[in-house]
Length: 117
Image 1 (cartoon, rainbow, N blue to C red):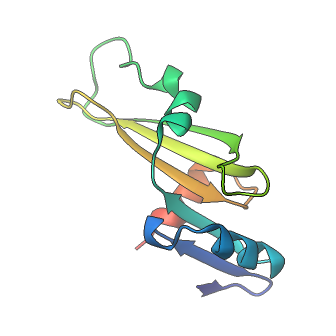
Image 2 (cartoon, rainbow, N blue to C red):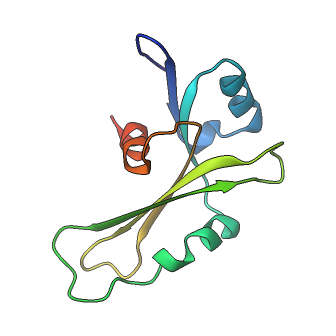
């Protein structure tokens, strides 16, 4: 957990992914970014990003972001999901990650916060 002057921030990987955790964080006004495991319903939301970009691939990865509301069967309400899709030169398939968050920042900034080391 990181402490800011005004708020608490929490980031975690999919191992801590649980509706009880989200509800606790939300009830205590803690901002969070938690990686979650992929499933077919999440991939349905980013289907249009899963097509290889047209043209010659650059040496630098092409990174695409998409955020959308999502409600899993075990959740009481919808929450914000951010998908990050990276197309790397020489790789046949993209690298894909999903982050659950209650932050209102731009998708790129939330992903950067979640992947900081």
